[in-house]
Length: 374
Image (cartoon, rainbow, N blue to C red; front, side):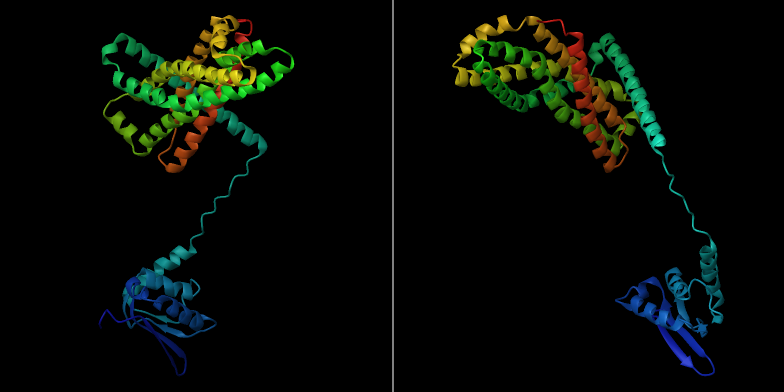
């Protein structure tokens, strides 16, 4: 019998109804046009409340898709009267076994508030342990770098300083000037009402050099460079570059983590100096426009109004913020799973955590140096 005949259904009625299937009931034949939908409609009509005899001996070919189509039309059980070729018995026996198997039911665990709180606490300590381990590995890598400086990753450090420092000069300058103008404008309104125009130098100098400059630069770097570090390490995880480096014996810490951390420790104080200068320039512009204070007088009064210790405190904050931002970004980058969803979630968590930690660290600095620099 030819094997390329289309699947058909024939019904004959004499003493009993006989439903005869002919042709090739295989996936290629069933998928032609709307043939499958038509046959399923016919099978549903013939199977509904019928005790007819089913004759499958005329089938030229039958695969699992065709057998499953018949099995679903029969209500996942054999009809009372079924005749078929012996070679087709095995397919329906397997379908009967599978239909009799119970579906696996995995009840969704209900988490109470206590369990959710416990999961968050355990997750926090897991992150803390991983962060401390990363910090310890960084100290070992730095010691190795000090002992053998000629074998250090100088090119990586230089490239990271350029990307995190030099390429961030534009955005930090813009934000610094705008913040200086806004702060000077608001301060000038209040000082002029009380006749304290000269104190605008003290107010701008202390707030920008000691607090706003380091904080603004740290937040911008956390959003710009911190996210870039996390995304870079995450992409390397997704593309299995980190696994390839491990197979080749290249240490992640010495070649990836340490250059980024050292580069950001070096770049952050320089960015803070740049941000301070731009913010003070913005403050001078606004002070001259509102109070008539010349830039020369502003620069002359600045060293007297702001002790030099405040400048060093700001630079110390910058180095500390750079260390924290780089470590947090690398920590979340190494924890990213090899999928795109985890990459986006990890980058977002890295930026939010870095900014939060920077603000907490700035508060600690303010408490520790509350009596210094005044």
